[in-house]
Length: 206
Ligand SMILES: Nc1ncnc2c1ncn2[C@@H]1O[C@H](COP(=O)(O)OP(=O)(O)O)[C@@H](O)[C@H]1O
Ligand SMILES: [Mg+2]
Image 1 (cartoon, protein in one colour):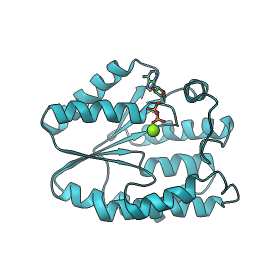
Image 2 (spheres, helix red, strand yellow):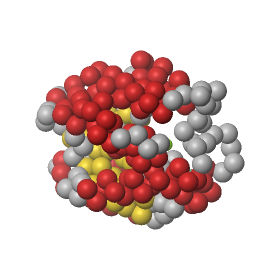
Image 3 (cartoon, helix red, strand yellow):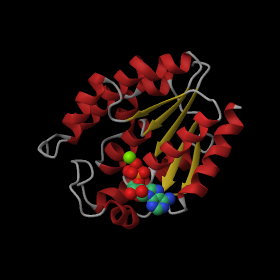
Image 4 (cartoon, rainbow, N blue to C red):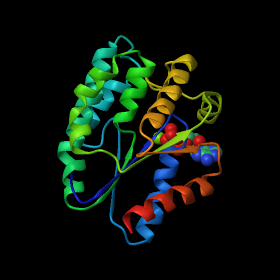
């Protein structure tokens, strides 16, 4: 692995990932640290094209296997094109979702075998293991309330039972990987959350 640092942000939609990444990016940039931020699925031209297919509400007939493979394809492109080169050149990389989202959504949520998901995402496990994965844990109901009643993309419209399984899947991953995971209560105030995240990040990179 390279000399840089990879920090990933996980949790169900509405838990506050994008908010925290924005606050953290600002704080690190103010510290004079050069960072790269990516969101999954997507993050490169080809990966963004795959994202369009994945999130399009018209693609309700997509098979769970196709969904998992497209997520892995988007990630492989992002890794080869940007994340791995960035880590090799010593950068700090922030990812809004990463391989754990595939294990939680396609594994715990959709019911696909975890060993198959690990196999199709092998590049991530071999070449870019996160230094820290921040899990913003929040009740499904709170997340739904935050998102309101607006239009949902295909993944967001999968229902509360599905999201409960995804939330539990993330918690199980955190328990299995205590060396890499930091679990934070996503209901805390934004400013408090970013302070906690910053202290973990600064301890590692400074
Ligand atoms: N700690 C927080 N407390 C209350 N509301 C929050 C908090 N973090 C984010 N929000 C709000 O919740 C909504 C979803 O946040 P967002 O960062 O977009 O979540 P995600 O990227 O995980 O889907 C936004 O309207 C955001 O302003
Ligand atoms: Mg977001």
